[in-house]
Length: 397
Image (cartoon, rainbow, N blue to C red; front, side, top):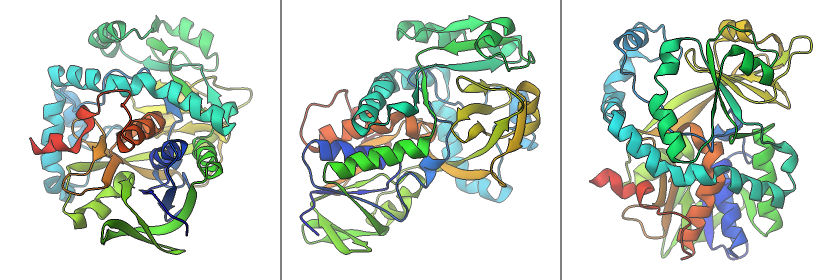
């Protein structure tokens, strides 16, 4: 194989975006994965580009909500009792990061990435000739109780500070946007600046094709084989050993499998995500993703049908779902740090090794922005935002 400047491990939306941005800057790049681009964690998501996100998910503060989770009756969380001792330190960190003042800090630190999310996707989609997948129709969040809606005041205030428009709607106003919804909710919020894609897998593959057109190579290989070979990083691939001066770990929930043998142990936890596609019954259709916030699922219109993230009975009460497209639901993993920030930057103690993982539920949203930021750092360009909040060094303090 010809000379390679950088190896990117992981061909999901984040790794593919990193590889593409490096190739755009003239580096010879190999994108290494055990499967084809986009077929692991990036395959299963609601297709939302959340450029309008304010607060990350938080540890429940409501005693009733905590009791429902403890009794395994909550849709937003489930657990195995035997696993609790292992995950307890992370949960305590997550709870600390969910204090009101910490959530506001996180919102401010993450805003530069979210603010670029839609624009960075638009740029790559245009370059890849894949604009047809993009829908700039916003998304709709539904609230079934006055209490849940009234709790949004702080989020609305920050959204106004960030210059993010929103429209609070009653059920009639929401159904003007989405006539197929049943009026089983009391309030809705329309976020017009959010975008979505009709086929997340096709988008990742389009970015991978653009990467290849710029001279990048996609190689099947074993990411766990990453090791030092003299002054280079080496990984074993189907085409033999591959060496490069720089390597990027963009493996999402699988990153610890590669990093732990190198002495890098960052506090990552893994959540589960689910989806299944359904046809709309009759003429029912959606123009944008719709989130049933208090029950905890998203209805997202896809090329394959309407994608459902859990809780079928409630979803059928909201929207007339027809037959399922797949025989079984898809399940994947979401890599999460307790402070709800990804790691983007140098790996501690390992020269030439870079990290881009831990994006939680925002891998699709932040993939291109992450790719641009890391490529700028790796090539010595001026980063479009301060990368310090996303550095691995924060866990050593």
